Amino acid sequence: MGRNEIHMSPGRWRALCERFFTAWGAPEDIAACVAKSLVESNLAGIDSHGVVRIGNYYNFVKPGWWIPSRRPTVSREGPSTAVVDGNWGFGQPAMHKGLDLGIAKARAHGIAGIGVIQAGHIGRLGEYAERAAASGMIALMGTSNARHGGHVVPFGGSERVFSTNPMAAAVPAREHAPFIMDFATTVVAAGKLELTGDPEAPIPAGWAVDKDGRPAEKGRDYLDGGAMLPFAGHKGYALMLLVELLAGALTGAGVTQRPQVVPTGGVGFGGNSTFIIIVDVSHFTDKEAFLTDVDALFQRLDGVRPAPGYKQVMVPGEPEAAQRARKTKEGFSVTAAIWEQIARVAGESNVSLSDFKAEE
Image (cartoon, rainbow, N blue to C red):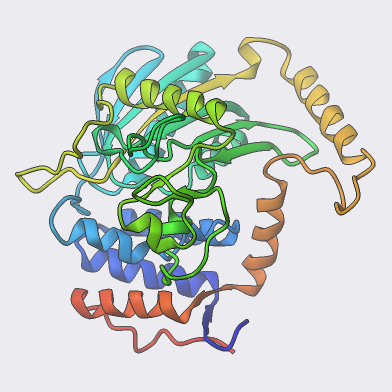
């Protein structure tokens, strides 16, 4: 732990998050759901979606764009489909409600398609993929900002159009850890540029461009009218566009507009829309045979001779699982700059931090 870092156990971080969210009007169960989501992101090593989001969330709650007290509802439903409306509350409860429906419908019919709309930031998409795999389901999902995208350039373009439009997938295993894929269709997640606490810090080449389309050298270049880049050029752009069409157009949430639409009535800005496909293996093949094949393939990958500079070949999801196992025991830290952001929000939210101190 660095000298200027604030370190606490996962339980203390969850309690801290819950204190903020209930102060903003969230019921205790919703506050607990969102707090767990943020802390689990830190535990998985995805700090851009962790407790650093407290300040970011407050920026949407303060002007009334998100209403923490609101609960998700089902706005449309069929035998194997549903659309969950987050009603501009926190996004995590809406996603879990969508998963509940998707898993139940897939068990009954083999496959289910679920839309989640008008939800605040849903957090780490892999959280929901992990839950699907734990339920023995295959899952594929993608998320957009619906009508409010606009900080990623399309391939060959020079102006913002899309959000980072992440994708996630899950495949369960029996003896091995499941396959969990989760990545933005940009080179990096937006949080790594927006929530660093130090916009003057240098960033790697290829992450973003400045307002003139030149390679961004520091976070400030992106924040002052710049844009992020899709990964793998035209291939990442194609996946980004696919997510926009499924999560935005198909769900009815809408697609990115120009200019960004800020609601005049106050509510409904900066949220996510998601399309989820859930598959029950047993409707397609013998589940035990399927799991035997999955484990055999994963075990083969485990045994592949590593290339120079690598310790082993890993199945997607294993690095996060290893981080979680370690950090659950050890806790995790945030920088002094991030803690200062949290403290500023605490002052504005009338939230006391006196009993939350760095642990030795």
